[in-house]
Structures are given as C-alpha cells and as structure tokens.
Length: 84
Ligand code: SF4
Image 1: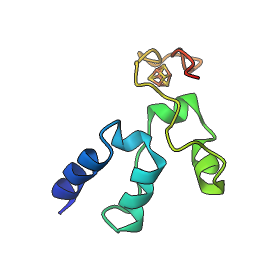
Image 2: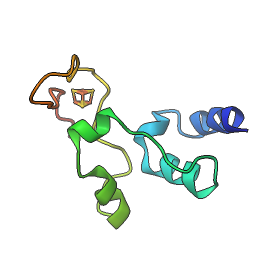
Image 3: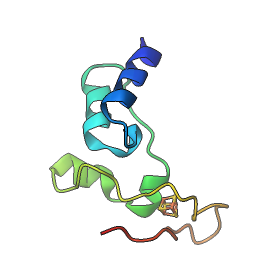
C-alpha cells in the first residue's frame, strides 16, 4: 500500500511531497508510516519539526533541494539561496 499511497500523495502534492507539512502529517496520521525522514530541510531549518508541531511553521520547508550543502563538511550549513 505504501507505494500506491505515495504516488497518490505526489499527485496530490506535486510540488514536493516531503517538503510539505500537510503531506508529512497525512502520511503519519493515516498510518502509512510511523515517521518521515526530512534530511536536508533540517540542515536549513533545524527547528522545523518544532515549528510544525506548534503550528508556527509555514506549510513548505525552506529547503530548495539545491544540494549546496553537499558534500557534507564542517560546519554543516545551508548554502542555498534564501527564498522570500
Ligand atoms: S544548501 Fe540547498 S539542499 Fe542544502 S539545506 Fe540549503 S537549501 Fe537545502
């Protein structure tokens, strides 16, 4: 069921499923998965889960998937452009 459901979510949220609070919430709330992995959005916004948890965050994570933070070096930091 997971693959079919994920395809349905991609169709429902075509921008970027794993970057959207609504999509992540739906995946967990419906029991498709017990957790989701965010990865790069947490480099840009380490506080993102708490923002989403408290309702203070925007629906879309700020990470633009540009891979500017790769290869991983110290200090690990976002080098992506800021989006308004
Ligand atoms: S550098 Fe790009 S991919 Fe990496 S966290 Fe920043 S916006 Fe996301």
